[in-house]
Image 1 (cartoon, rainbow, N blue to C red):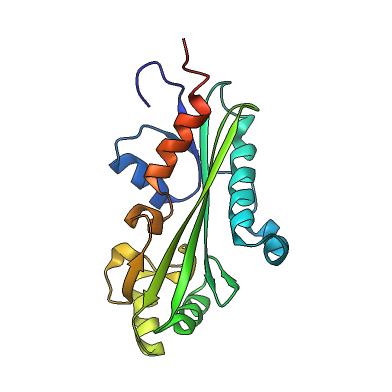
Image 2 (tube, one colour):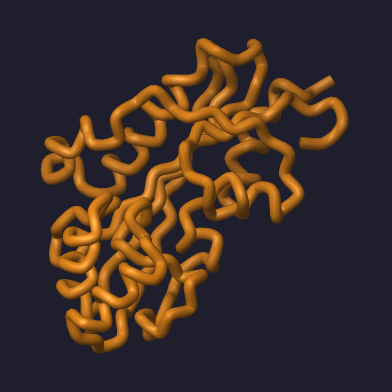
Length: 202
């Protein structure tokens, strides 16, 4: 954040999102949300993916709002993969990661980010949805297992990382690499500007 701007908190336990902000030169304090990401899974079918990712991100932001100084800008995000209408999250175990990757071989799925910015404690909220189509290369289960054993993508939605450059991904369309990783920086900047417009006005 620039001189005179409110401080920024990233409400995320993701080292990948924190690294994206750092690489972009955006100074932010990182706080892990006190919110179970899976607690809203039962609503996915009724809400649809757009509302789902925004609601999860909104709950993440709200969970840290009481712990920061008034006027602090909070940014939170959630990412899911959707294949054939099925929600794919973080596998957490190697067996689930291999199973998830095998189910996507040679197929196209969607990565969807919900991004929320707000001002603590109960300031304005702005949100956006960012989506990508990811086409996986054809590979067999042995290749999927070898990838999981080498890269251990257990904390990654869809059980893969684009930055691994392991040959699993055939094509990507969307807003950019940062969005695939989980935090579309152009959207983050735009949302911060929207919620701080009144805060920084003379």
